[in-house]
Image (cartoon, rainbow, N blue to C red; front, side, top):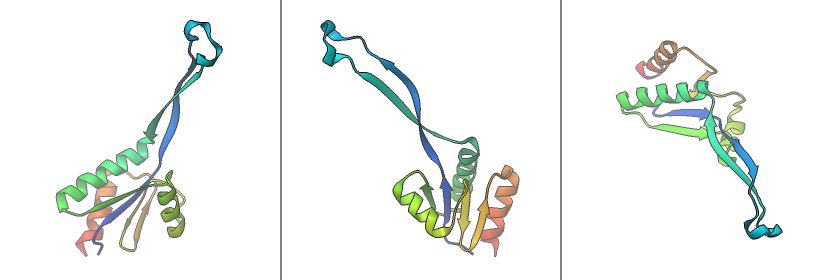
Length: 114
């Protein structure tokens, strides 16, 4: 049915630590705030992504990953009417939300067995 798998996920940037350094030589301009962030993905998105990549690798099918937290990903999701992650699209078939791994694999299998 489809020639590729598209998966829409959300990879968020979260604050890890925040603090204030001590001034070097007690000078006010060297006292600055340190902000550290990290990119994280919801467990449901990560699980779906891993299943899709594993399935696609076994079948030799290309995967297009769209992060809805990027400008391009947000635009693609908006044009396709995607409002939730994970969302997987194969041809005209849309698989939305969290599914058990076996159910997701079965749905993917049925998309490529037609």
